[in-house]
Length: 154
Image (cartoon, rainbow, N blue to C red; front, top):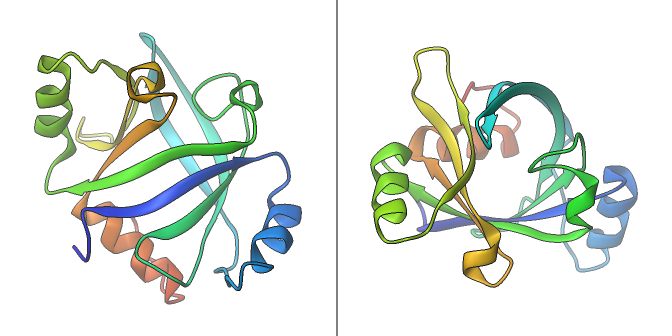
């Protein structure tokens, strides 16, 4: 882990157009990729979706641009702009449980087939409209590999 806050996620309507805008800041980005989210649990409902993303070469924290999709946590109804700040921990499940005990409820989570958590999101209303995204070191390491041009599963 290079930093406790690995990236800042920005939700956008058009990923290609957003890359052009953010390049004006002097940022460069990895080739966009489509990530299959096989198991997303939000408000007790389970779904899957394809999420198109890219990460800046600069960082940490890196800039993550996510193209809005669906009706849930990644949906356009959230509006373009700051979507989340990603915190890196060894295992997201104990951290999410700790945060829930502190009165910060979970909004959504992505899980692997073995029920291990890939990513957890807190409700944004409790943090002034910002979602905290809790990711495991394995996910952060996979993101770093993607940025270097390697293909590694999170």
